Amino acid sequence: MSLMQGLAAGGSCGGAAALFKSINLLPEGTMATENKALDEVQIRGLIEDKITAVRAKDIDRATSNYAPDVLSFDVVNALQYIGAHAIRKRLEGWFSSFQGSIGLEIRDLNITVGDAVAFSHCLNHVSAITTAGEKLDMWWRETACYRKLEDEWLITHQHSSVPFDVGSGKASLDLRP
Image 1 (tube, rainbow, N blue to C red):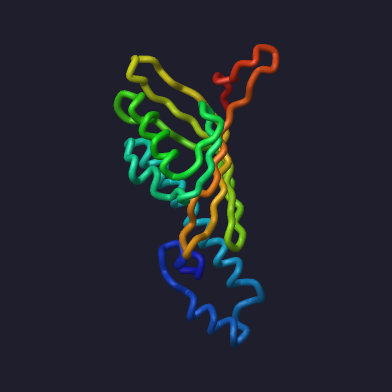
Image 2: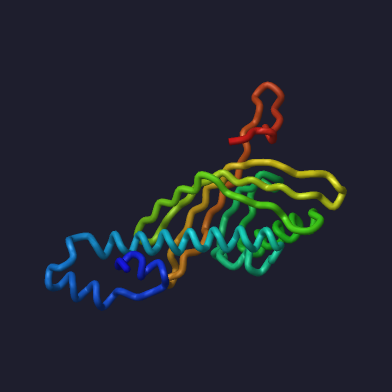
């Protein structure tokens, strides 16, 4: 098992890696590379956990990785949502607008990690039946920003959007990747 595989599996390498580095067995920059790779694994896990929570309409789990001061630009009114409490209220309303579970998938996930900040972007697809019996089947774009606070990655900004038709001024909800 490589050092990276051990980290991804939840292992710790701080002491061993520091020892190897001190006796020149690890190339310069290896710890930073390994830490960023581990950070990416953690962020990917955060995203996967959020998807699982949304599918199950588990509000506590779906909102557990938002910073208290998160700022969200959503595809629906209002212009912005400020704070984890606003995200929770928005998701409670959204979850209650569907019968049964929510189908959610992401595509083309890209994650970029720095020392204490990171961002991701992807395409999201939702499919569900509303409480009015209508089928929702749409794609949207999402960019999320993360900040590492006390060794935990939290979502500090989220921006969801759909393109719009300039001629009609209406959202283009029928686009597919």
